[in-house]
Image 1: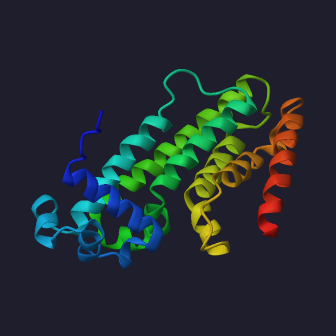
Image 2: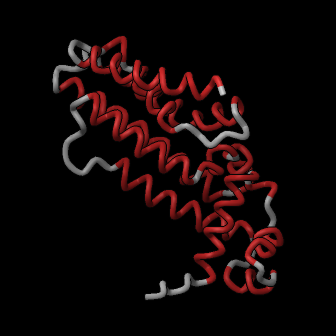
Length: 218
């Protein structure tokens, strides 16, 4: 059975997302998007009047996906492995819309929707980081004061927000390594982890560092 053809608005967003991620949003015009799709600029403008409408549509999609992930439906994960898995999912979502993170300063200066909504996402990230730390503490895996958890949550938010930009600066032509980001975030908790959670983190880190060090050598 043949798959139904995707509608033009959806194709425009998918093409724009790919081009934004590859070349940076400021470097991609609506003409470039139309040329890539082999459609006329007029056809594109029929669905999206300008590039800001495309950016806003992609940002709205990103906001829905990351907000759903950051909203912990039940209790926060209480095991290091569960937090590790959660961080991988978080970085997968961030990587899918990585142009937002790489071009965030430019977007914030000229796009009011991104400016206001990205602030909410940062606050949501920080709240979720606090919940994750409290979940580990409730399970006896983390020994930290409320003030230490608050500071740790800020650092977790900082790293999850700017990790891809750091990785892109180090390896501009290499796909982002989301596992490395998850490892870096989780390592922030190391000073407050109790046994056996600390040993588990060391085990996860050891296997991951070995695999990524081989990648850096290439």
